[in-house]
Length: 99
Image 1 (cartoon, rainbow, N blue to C red):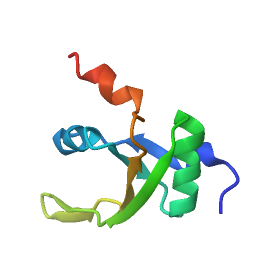
Image 2 (image 1 turned 60 degrees about the horizontal axis):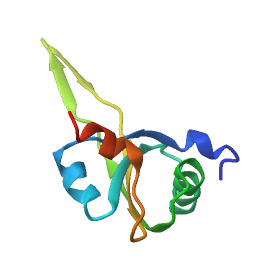
Image 3 (image 1 turned 180 degrees about the horizontal axis):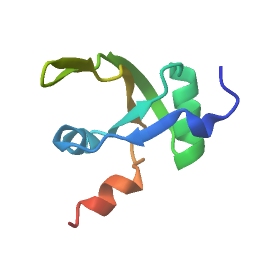
């Protein structure tokens, strides 16, 4: 377990699917490979001041990319889908809706 919870969350994942899920109090984040559900829950609660009900985790395999005759692979990463309590929301999704 990491002592520094601010390093657990890498970035929020903003996509059409994440905007639809935000209406159901679900938010997606790219997280560190070592992070577990408990660390992710504590990091979201500490950074955003909200109550987390559930955390789902998925490992995403990196895609293979081709550059001419060379084939490389993107890095594997981990994402977390965080479900918040009723009445809770995260501000960065609402700010972008006005655009």
